Image 1 (spheres, rainbow, N blue to C red):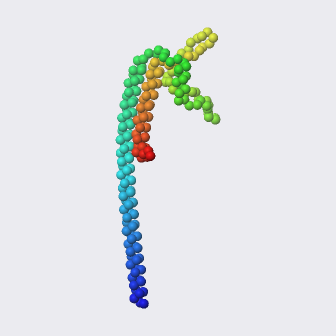
Image 2 (image 1 turned 30 degrees about the vertical axis):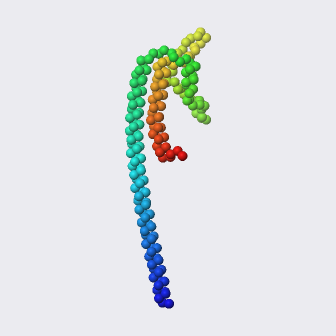
Image 3 (image 1 turned 90 degrees about the vertical axis):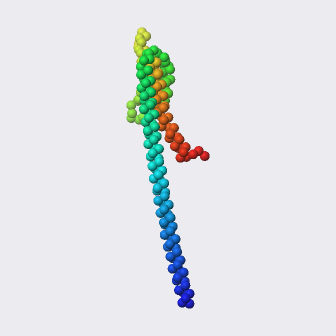
Length: 174
């Protein structure tokens, strides 16, 4: 009976030692996995920073190019005439595009309408019954608005396309 008790005690000690060794081994494997995950996160963060830096440099180069092109266009626009090319109705249609509501918020004074056509000119003519104000756009006004619009489009697309590409890589379509 005594030997049976000793055998049982040795079996319990061996079992506990095996369990402790297994727990230590498992904890070591968890620590190794955590270290590898941290290393992978650091590498991914470094790659993302590098990609962001490259994208920022590309965007800055593209923006400098667009600004140069806009400056060249403005120089050519300055040489255009002040001849009327859009009448008042066409200017009103262009002004209405993209403008926000003219409603004032509570407690705010009313805002003037936003204009989309750049630098529309006002000319006054006396009709005999009073002064009539006629709005029209010159060739310079129209060319300037188009040049500015194209420059802003190029700037926005230079930012949006890389963002959409990155989103497609991170979240591929199913």
